[in-house]
Image (cartoon, rainbow over all chains, first blue to last red; front, side, top):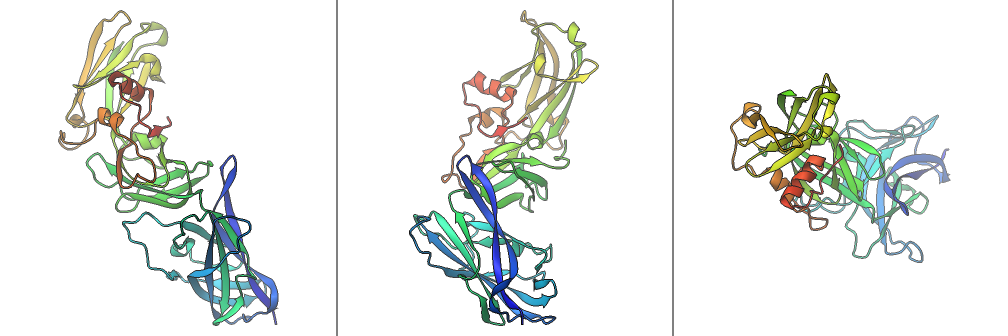
Length: 234
Length: 170
């Protein structure tokens, strides 16, 4: 019988200025070196879920986090010779315990989710599972701790305490939201652009049918937006 | 010196990039851009201190020849972003001594499809005058992409208006 599977959270850390760093997300990995035996089986797919928990803190030290589950990502898990394999389908989504925010509200805080290719099989077209919406933060919160629980066939394989935790300073987290229109107020739809964040890193983005470019999260600070390709009619 | 070859291009501002704040929702109006090529002759044949002047009804912008991009064969390229339809732009050449020569008068309508819209809320003057809110107050704030080229700074200076903070890095 294989050892229990643990979930590792590798932070996507970027510099947010001379004195700090921003954590814009995490890469999920699975490790087969947990305590106890695993419920996963060689060659047999079993339903599995990653239950994300969050705790908000006013200070990093001296405060015990109180975790609450806020989102669940469900798929199938199996064991291979190379280790565990968590498989997601093209239509799988993250289910949240709180209702979706109103479109008229400011975009909620989000984190990027990436999946280690050695242990996860995620269709590249499934973008819905690549952003994790955080629950609303209470006033005064300065840090979020994100934990995750792994369940296999309904049973807890690895608890929040057994897995990695992600420490997310809230101050550098922001979003970029712009609606691009031409001089006749027509949306500039489906345009390929590049967004450069304050740390110099770049990201390709595309405006939607309404000409909107929404990138969430970004590092708080000025962002530079520019065309990538033909740049329009020039 | 002779010959002005003009053409209108759009979206030039975003080709070189604009700096915008995170943490707010903003509407960006990407304005057409007036580019023209001026045949100024060889550099050693040019009149010292000569400058082009781009004039519309409500403003005047001076473009020293030294601001032009050398394109070879004595050609200089100039860019003037933030123009609007239906406005006639007059291009003149002024020597250091003050003599002015009319070079050309153009309107955007000849270069862009459609008819000039006098109600269009964009003009270089309006670009310079728009306030730029900061988060968290900035929400659905309508903002015009304003270039911060030397041209724009001069424009702002002529009218005593602050230069726009929508930064363009040329």
